[in-house]
Image 1: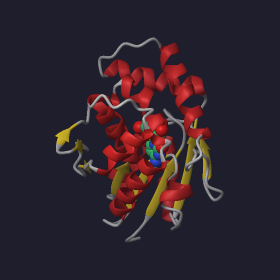
Image 2: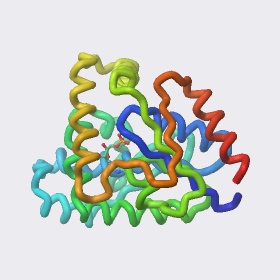
Image 3: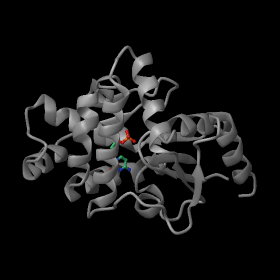
Image 4: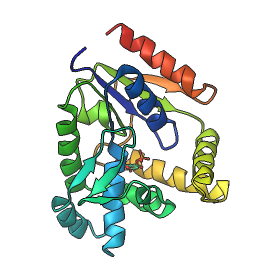
Length: 220
Ligand code: C5P
């Protein structure tokens, strides 16, 4: 399908980006990581010493920020022309990002960018509000979940691979806090779309999940 749209939502560490990237590759479609955009804004606040709880200042800053996602295999992320691919994954950014993601001005600007990206062609997009808000007409909506223990463990392993040794309990606590903020916020909270398929990935491998989702797209 020429303008196929797949929405992947779910809490942190559910495997959204790994799965979305694999599907994008198999189907030869675009992948848009919307979390990276929120992370880029959080990183910029930190670098400019704008306290993340200053909504007005963050809102002003976001209007003057250019974010670019590179669609090559490298999937680099640029903020105002600067490569921030690695920097946006720091635990510090992870701890602050949900605060700025709750601001309606921030969401408005980034959602606009996300919808623009979706116009490039067939796309798989992951985030928190893709099925409910960004792409309400998506052909397939998946809500990925997994137990908090499993999710924290996956993220801990990822960080370790990137050379960052953080106690697993700390990872778990940060994650629980972020999920709570994302679920309880007023603007586009994290929740499954009414027409989303909920997939619990606790007991499944990445390959199994990817195969299942690909099988679902065969029918579209
Ligand atoms: O997906 P990732 O974990 O990188 O997202 C980082 C944060 O960005 C989330 O915890 C959430 O606060 C915010 N986010 C959002 N809406 C999206 C994607 C991410 O609010 N569509």
